[in-house]
Image 1 (spheres, rainbow, N blue to C red):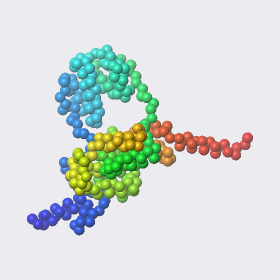
Image 2 (image 1 turned 180 degrees about the vertical axis):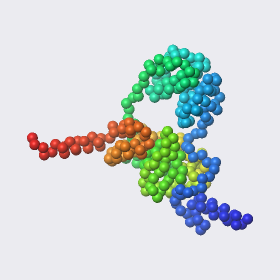
Image 3 (image 1 turned 45 degrees about the vertical axis):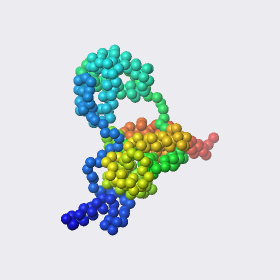
Image 4 (image 1 turned 90 degrees about the vertical axis):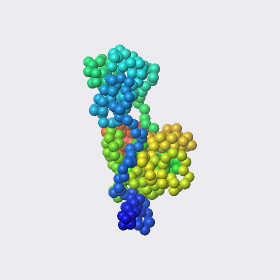
Length: 352
């Protein structure tokens, strides 16, 4: 029994990064044991639409169709919500609606509700899937008549000084480090909080982002200074799997109790925690455009200003289409200055 207890203690020391002598190693290990019962995906856990209590049989059948057609849970939730709003508007089974009624509802969304073009297109995609694919109706003319165009707006990006001021305004280190990582590696909020110790490859200087937008993986370079920050951060809680574990509710002034709660966490840090802190920080520095996602836009903008190729930025950002990355060309004057310099060089010393 004693030998078994000694073996168990040694195994626990390896998991927490301590040897038998008690010395600690502030290292994020890639071969850590994967414990069970820990959720690694950030955000709330939602039920699959087929398990909802639907008001009408047609809506339940549509939920089953979505489960067979779409792998992304957010897409299934969005389509079911669109159909539910349609049923609530007319107070009837949506399968009984005609083309004219659906057209009136589209006008209601655009003019009365003031929905954005992207939301209107989402409803039209939902309506097409429900009325044509699910119910087998003849394609309506309505689907070719509705036209929506997005506003030609630029994403919000911060200057480098504004990024520094924002991070300084976040006083707690356990919240400042993930925000810094979002900016340094151009991550989405959910991608950052879903990271595990297995995604950090310190010897290779890279970060593996798994199941990002569209369930696609990608690799981002990880600067050495950021790696050291992550190692010091992990050393505070030494969670066997999560990089940013949930600290729970309430204020925690005792560092030992805070570390114990983070070490025993079964889920990542809540998404709303960082978002609320950024709202408080941006009010303190008087930068209303500062959001968590603005840090990602700032990452791409600052890389472009530094001369990084657009296709390289596309891969780092995880964009499938280059058009999504080209919007950052309009947010920097670096390329325009380069063109002016080249034109001056071309015209120099030419005969007059």
